[in-house]
Length: 128
Image 1 (spheres, rainbow, N blue to C red):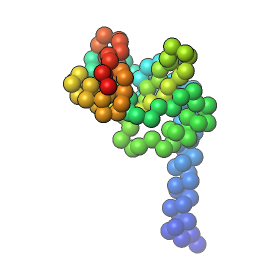
Image 2: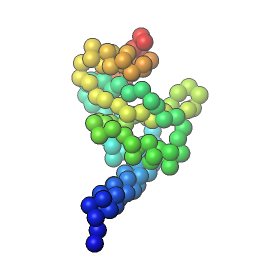
Image 3: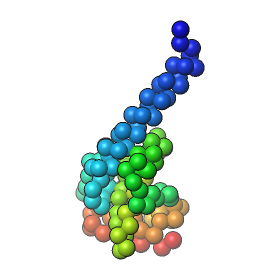
Image 4: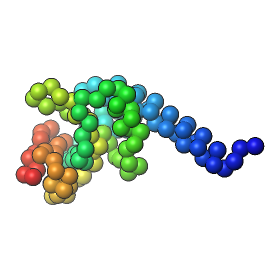
């Protein structure tokens, strides 16, 4: 007979295994810079702004990405990937905001140097 505690533990382990697998799959779908759904589909909005939360993952292995992915907060909307001038790859939790003023405020709060302007396909400095 299974106790409630055993059932909860078994379910938590199965959920974690699922999230790790999903993270590994998503990692391979994020092969270029951009904003992505949690399943790794590249997104392009006609307007609005993408702003990253603090806490980038830099040059992760597939397994490191999967571990990070499995611990993302439930309210995570999107993921972002970008490559800097040194070739380092950054993976971030990203939020989409339609208004520039809101995006700038969030960028400052999260300590971001830039946000992404979808309409003009360019970075905008947050003046942190």
